[in-house]
Image 1 (cartoon, rainbow, N blue to C red):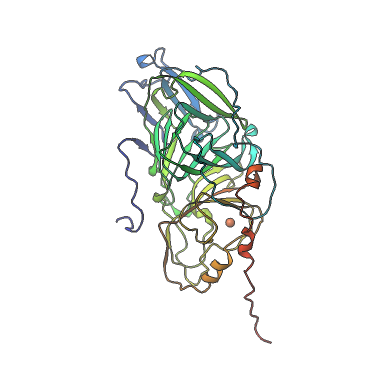
Image 2 (image 1 turned 45 degrees about the horizontal axis):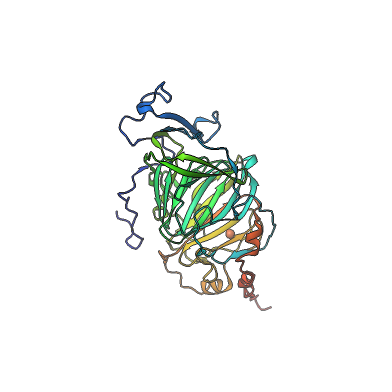
Length: 442
Ligand code: FE2
């Protein structure tokens, strides 16, 4: 068996970065041999004079199968910093997304400002629901960046970030080691993990933030043990540290607001770690798509890469869903996505190419939002072409890659996103869905 030759090259694991593969595994990593304590977490004296520090991603008492925590062995503990004070620099990252707009919404690509700015400066909140204070809800952000964060880092007390680079490669330094994340890959950096994003040019992408549970792989049911995103394709970093005196600025998102503190040493001083709470990345090329091979469509849940569940069985606070390059072979079937109304909020973005249901107007770096019971579906041109198309097997080309942040929550819009880069003409794309009704003659 070989991979289909027409798919993009499968990612080679780069030599500069080293990874450990598996989803939810308990990893062990030490940058210096012998720096990880053997057989216990908190010896009276850690090897090489390190401090032991636990990072918990859950309450201590959750069921074992969902417990996530890691032990970090570091040169100085995280607590060495000046008091946190409000971050006064203007920001478009917000927890105010209370503008309610039920319309089909589409945003033109968010431009990458020429003025130098980093990943944190360039964060724009688009939409959200709930609030981190009650650990329930999500937020959708766009980021842009033209420069690296340097001696500035970020950690989020509110939730986990799922980052989807659209343009530019992210060189992410974390407490756990390095992640290099290309466009076409995603990464997840969980609550509390300190990281800095370095870029080599104008960069842009999307972020899904979840305030409650962590992302997990969806259950496969009758699909069986294989398919969709396979656990071994998730990559976590290996320990990498620096011991460096510096004027480091740390930004903290806490309760929807930003705070800052300073410290005189690099926060990337973890020499060894073990545990199952650590960042990871995933190459979307490796997603094994499943769909109908007879007629009709499966629901788009079949394209779920990761899901963040609520306490209600089968209902996600957010799913991360992709529409990857794939063959469509259904016979006697309207092959684009069907018209629908549903009880979900669907924020879509485009990483590259052209989305199959919208040939124009939905562009990389832009987005769309279709909310609870708001009707949507293919534009008129796509419909008219699809009902005439020959039903031979066709390939959604490799250059196309769209995704969806799908939530069971009703999303509000930030004031900024409700006023900026909105495509006012979006509604018009359906107005030529004319009647094709031809009743039998009496
Ligand atoms: Fe939809």
